[in-house]
Image 1 (cartoon, rainbow, N blue to C red):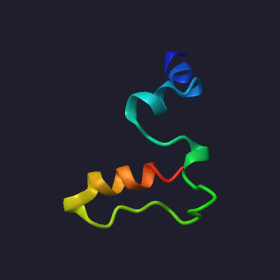
Image 2 (cartoon, rainbow, N blue to C red; image 1 turned 90 degrees about the vertical axis):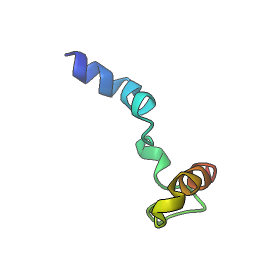
Image 3 (tube, rainbow, N blue to C red; image 1 turned 30 degrees about the vertical axis):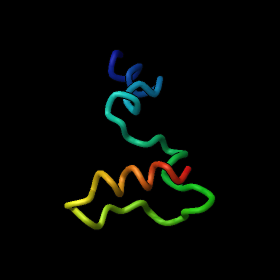
Image 4 (cartoon, rainbow, N blue to C red; image 1 turned 30 degrees about the horizontal axis):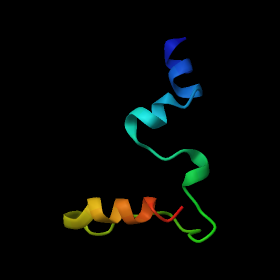
Length: 52
């Protein structure tokens, strides 16, 4: 029961920092947000998350 509430309320997205289902694809970006450079991954994540 607690696990279902954790996921269904969206708290799991906030705790783990994963995007919600409606945030994977934006109007500008219709392809999957892939990280391609492992040494600058944090910069790529920040850039992809700023493109909302």
